[in-house]
Image (cartoon, rainbow, N blue to C red):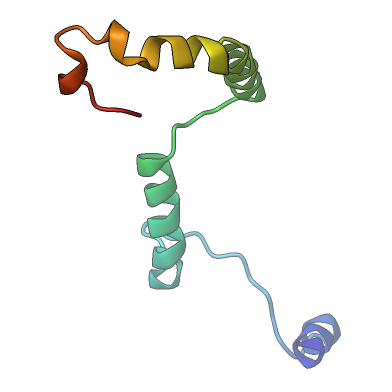
Length: 89
């Protein structure tokens, strides 16, 4: 790699800008990656959106019922039909 950089610096290898009507075939993998990201990722996702989602998730986590409340509602006496038809958790 250093040999190439030195050759470019010394002028042995010329660097030219070329403007074509169609992209280089060598750029196709990069184009496919960009298209896949745009297709499968929500774009644009701003930092504000990420922060709002994070804040909402933290808020929802605080709303979890306590273990005592869950135990109360999981008992057989709270079963809507008969205690035998309840599936224990």
